Length: 617
Image (cartoon, rainbow, N blue to C red; front, side):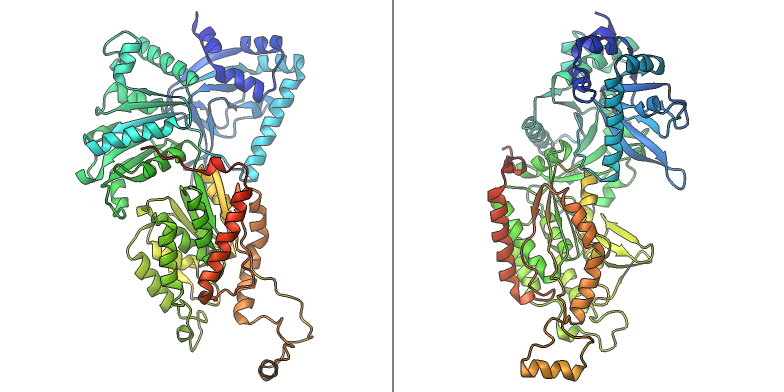
């Protein structure tokens, strides 16, 4: 059996692709398409296409992973899309006669593709017009996804685990990770010994002979087509098997025992020649002691290393490791919490209801009050701990009258009280030190756009996110003036959908509508005060200063927020609109409303199982 026939026979991926994407059901058409293709292999780190080249072929990806790169404003390549197995690339140039490539297509792992040349493509579409129709629909669908921030869960298939330290904690972590992956599909663990035995040649896994390397590639491609996931294991520094693992992986993790120091390990030398900006997924899996309360100094692990991310886990902690498995397999739960002042106490009740249903949070973000609640969750607090901490902070009223400015040059409140509360709770914690991946958003008045906070001092990022214009003074952060995130994005669903989450869980806190009034102009201070004393309620529908500021601020992003609701898989909107933004004393009432609302939503949800966690032991 020759190589091309072998690929056609063994790659169910191709058949699935032709049936599902191109709706090719006619056996004669299927065979003709197969005959019109040529199998090519491209090593990781090479370019399949270059921007500006003539588009004379399209490709179907059998195994591997590609990324599309375009230059930014300063000419640096940035990743604008990924192509995984079962997808096509280059079809736009087939449709648009004479078009050139608009992006560089770069291989981030060894890839096998089927090429359809333009001349063969033209013959096929003349004979089978439905083939062109389906390709056109595929192009339109991709464009729509890009424009509407459709959720794109991680779809990694081949993982490499680089064992950087010899310790029981590292071994146990790798074992638990493998078990966690096995929950999501048929998987296969492969090391150098397995390859040697499968090919009947001791040492072939470390061979640099082209023929031997081709045999290994064919073996791995075959195993990939037969399994949902492959896990490649290596522990030796700078050997050829480690190099092959890196080139053949969608996602690589260096597993490190943090108790052994932050110095670069010998096995990490193989990453020195790759470029993180080109889409290679190389993360550090930092294994902390089982009794570690919170990591510290995470950014120091990035020094002298070429990695583009990290995960924190505690040794022997199955829940932590299951979270990482859900993240990399596209099965994670991303929780988005909106702003709303004291109404945000409803987030506490919703989180309690989720916990009771064993729905773990794998990624969490928020705006304004949502940024505070999200941070407590990211510290891996239980629902009860979040409730206790919130009660301690907010029942003490973070916006007291004594914090009002006599001369409100920057805001009605000085912000000293809330600054102290945030520093007491979050101390010197950095965002990158949190157990659960986290971000919050603020509004950057200097650049007139939303600001994403993914690293740096947690308390100060939150302080920026809650700085309601006119109420709290703005925050100066890296020479920029920042205010409340609700100005640009009250519920950042669009941001979390880009993080590869599987399920988006959203909590929106509607603000009370300002009702129509029965006066033609605003009353004087004495008229309003007299009405209150006499209890005529003549001016009860008129908003006070706080309500006017808040409603004006929230109104800017409310329409955008509603556009986001359709992208949420599990949506909560607790009826707390009748509470005030500063109604901190109603903590328990608001939290209970959030809880009762969430319980009803969860009871009515038919596909709740996909959100639940089943940690391995």
